[in-house]
Image (cartoon, rainbow, N blue to C red; front, top):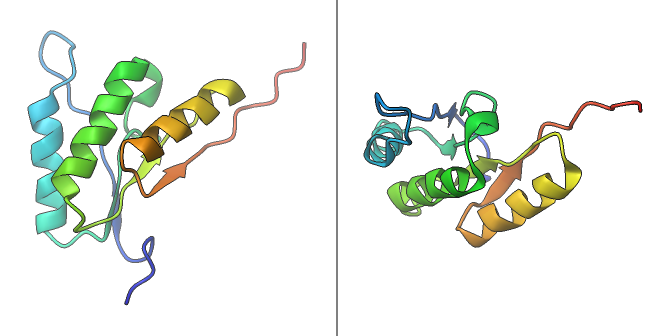
Length: 113
């Protein structure tokens, strides 16, 4: 048995429609395509996933779509980092509650007042 977060993973982009809204159908297609091609784990909303431009609702929608598309065939490591520790904790808890197998957090910069 393979350790859940080993092998080849994909940092997924977040697709948008022409009007700038989240393209949920494309999220599903993209995640399925990666798993069908043999990718070992998926990472939505990471550093390439446009997370800073997503609302909390959109970020959670992406994570839920990717978890559903992976359907247990590949673990999901959701990007949940932000410049706010409180937001990162809340987003991480929401991602795990939505079915993510883990979270990826880029530590926020230290901001000296």
